[in-house]
Image (cartoon, rainbow, N blue to C red):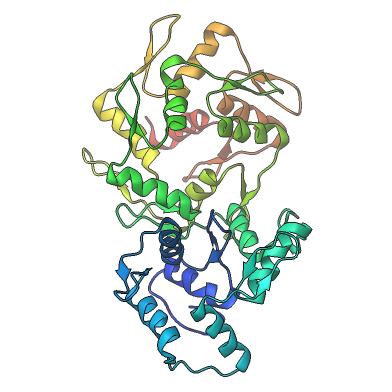
Length: 383
């Protein structure tokens, strides 16, 4: 339900689109002329105008238009016919007539660009003045336009209003959805020479090929750990700074990245859309399902170069390799003791916190480790 007008909608994405009528949000910006649009189809129609892909012609003069409605509008200019649309205020009528006639009477004194409406000029002028009045209450970052602030706030809320009609995958921004839909169409012109996998751009191929070469050009200044992608390094560095910008609106829990927040949301909804074809078990994320499927297939693609032992997951191989290197990257903030595995550190920290999360259902006694609880339950079962 829309809180502004009380109108009901069948899906959240439709509600989000409707609310733009109240907020005035225009998240789609033309890269050619910086004009902003409320809906994606409006931007696409406008881009066709830039490209000259105008399918409707006026036979008298050969001029082309985006739609039959635009042809009718053009005819009215020559015939003097009015469109019959009624407005409550003279200012709105005047604005509409300028738009219909293509008249642009508002000029920017800085760059000479013209606009059909004063609001368009006002928005444009902020690019020259650097004025940023729209402030995010979560992190304090400021923006020139309210639409840009609304887009930014999705980083904190985890909102993904753009849904793929093919697979129902959701995206935070329209360009992410567009890029994803290209993948569905198979319009991926750039191919990896090693494995034949296709990508949208040469840059994506270059990033992918690091899997084959083992190249990791991005190094953490704190611990020296290297990464194949810049965003992976950025996500890792938040562990050092303690920054957790993604907050769950349900329970207030914060996360390092949006992926963690989205996975967490499913705890509240109970959503488990991914099912294993072998055993019928359901999972909340696709990655969890893929991880589980390896139990059935016996797939172990990650091999230790020191002892030859193979693992189903890259994380398991990384943990194992520390046996050979002696590396212990997980340090306790209380006593400075170090551990090779993160779960070992978590277990150790319960000594300091006194936390005992494993509870016996028979007598209510609590334990630090699950193995200790298992041993204890034998006193009840007699095993």
